[in-house]
Amino acid sequence: MTPAHAPLRAVNDFVVKFANVNGSGSASANELFAKAILRMGVPVSPRNIFPSNIQGLPTWYEVRVCEDGWLGRRGGVDLMVAMNPQTWDADLAEIEPGGYLLYDSSRPLQRSRFRDDVTVIGIPLTRLCNGAWEDPRQRQLFKNIMYVGALGALLGIETEAIEALVGEQYRSKPKLLAPNIRALEIGRDWVREHCADAFGLQVRRADAVGDRIFAEGNAAAALGCVYGGATVCAWYPITPSSSLAEAFEKYCRRFRVDGEGRARHAIIQAEDEIASIGMVVGAGWNGARAFTTTSGPGVSLMNEFIGLAYFAEIPVTIINVQRGGPSTGMPTRTQQSDVLACAHASHGDTKHVLLFPEDPAECFEFSAAAFDLADRLQTPVFVMSDLDIGMNQRLCAPFAWDDARGYDRGKVMTAAQLEAGAEFARYKDVDGDGIPWRTWPGTHPEKGAYFTRGTSRNPQAQYSERGPDYVYNMQRLLQKFDTAKGLVPQPVVAQGAAPARHGVIFYGSTSPAMAEAIGQLRGEGVELDTLRVRAYPFPDGVRDFILGHDSVFVVEQNRDGQLRSLLINEFEVDPARLVAVLHYDGTPVTARFIAGTIAQHVRPGAERPEAERPEGTREVTA
Image (tube, rainbow, N blue to C red; front, side, top):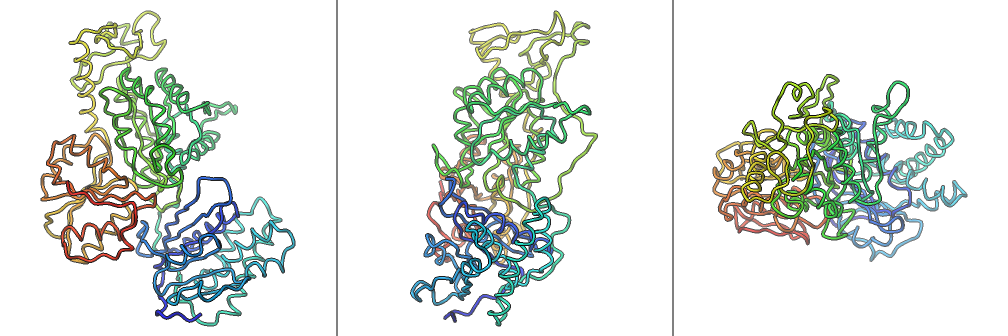
């Protein structure tokens, strides 16, 4: 079909989206497509968008191909591979003018079902599969591989790259190798025979990947837990964090087994989230490096034990892979909506350390660092990942692994110190940093024991409801939190190319879209200074950044501007200085949305297409 709009033309810079049905076996084929382009030295950024049921509902897989290296969602689709009749109209509407539609043309469709400004490629995939295989399940599975072969021919993906990946995938199942290669060839040959014109989107070999690795955030965090010395994990399955515990188990079978094959780790799937955090608190009290992994609903259930760990000062690491809330919310969509819930988890006055990784490399680094921080500060530490990072593969820096790395266990009094007469007062601040000394159970037969309680006590851990004792303890906990400012990962600040009146604060998975948005705004003559927050408590430099600008945009993926609220509360700055840029429809924020929103504020007359303002977004100035 000849389009009424000039077809898009691009080399190594476009977005492909696959529309499939959950449970159809398409996921591995779509991943194969993305990795084949990566093997050609061209950066890709895939995102799996799937429903929260087991089978039958729509699922999508979006691949951004970008030699310039932008890894955030761009917005819009240049090539839609439409394999799901249920979502046809919505999928068609996403295609950019001049874009392309590839569909299964085994059943003819009326012309009215198409758009005049889109180039249509109809391939009779079902008919081709029915002619090659008799088994219904094989027909479905190989249809997915067949469209990968067709796309390879259309886009110029090297045959060797695709077939090498298929060979690796079926190395342990050699009987499946030949039929998968055959399916690739059928799709490839059909395109070569029937599509004589050059396709407008092309992949060409490049050298833009460098030494970066392709990793999933949950797997990276799990490996970081091993590197950080974790030996205990107690968890309860919940989307999107379950694969983290499963990956930790896999890594422990390799790294936490002694020479005689005995496990040197404990991984427990508890009956619920309450039990899992209780086990982790008990293990931390005993001196083990222990963690749980969960998502927002799990954190809600864990609150009482989190409060106990905070008040009794027990090291605990909690990895929160955030999803859409509240309640069940959107289990398979991403948000940054647990910031306030985790910063003040439990009743009463609490303040918890939060770490905000931006990609799998920092998931690895921060998960390992969390155990040092928890031990050093004797407190719960949260690693605030999210679904976009945790369940998607992302190009990132290689993980830094040092076999000689030591662990910071903090102020743990030894038997020798106790024997030598050192004063032991479990909840006394002796160094001015708010952190007391502790002992592990069984350290000494007579000295160093104390009663661990969730009730108020004096510095010697003796029960006390005296006001001065309670105030002393609560102020000491504040001092400890202030000490944490110098221990947590520090913010990353970047100055604009010219002096800037405005700044931007962002964090976590917003990072790749933010980097691209800054470049877009610079091209429009808008200069901004940026600060990426990597932890809470905020170092004082964050306050200096805010006060150094007329206004600061705070970009985050939740409805209520939760990081903005923390900034206002911590620094008591004028709320009018902080302009909230909020995106919370469950999809990762795009550079187009960020740049368009900020441009409207700094240049009120700036136009922005309506398509760049999806539902679930809002801007707040005060």
